[in-house]
Image (tube, rainbow, N blue to C red; front, side, top):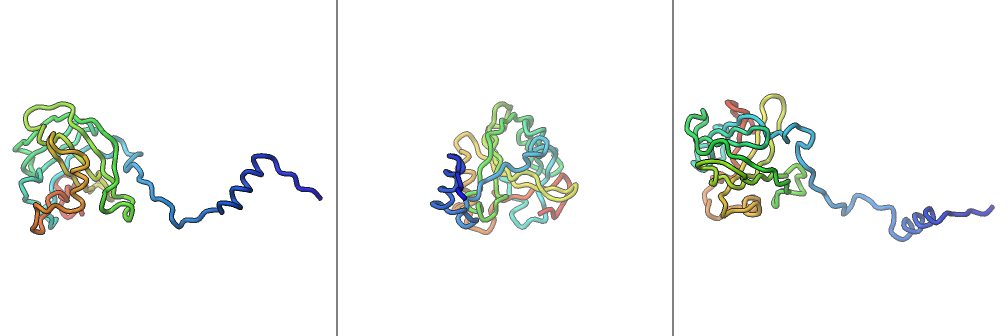
Length: 188
């Protein structure tokens, strides 16, 4: 009996013989867009700093309340109640996502959404670049993490904060602030 292989089948067989069938060892972990199936990537709603988080809930660099409207407009308040605005109605464009330089790929979910300021009034330039671990968690109580920088900053600088900040020599690192669904506590 004679076995005859077509060109494509023969090529595939040669590839398997020469290259092997492959295995999971050494496979590259690829970052995936978080919340890709969630409306507005989940960047919608009101979030307050978690007073039970050990990471500096009262640090003045962490806004007390953040209002996210459909991933396009953000407002920042110094207090959890939202009575003292830092910047309101700041317009943003989503600029994609990036893996965390410290925790990825060991933690494949460690991915940051990136937003750049497109419009806004007083105070918005303080929040020119915003990166966030998108809202996640079970049930109605969600939590997220957020970092920001002015126009002199960059996405790379904000992501690089994961590797530590020598300016924050104490154990307080405000760039890992935890935000809960508005009014919730202990959401981390």
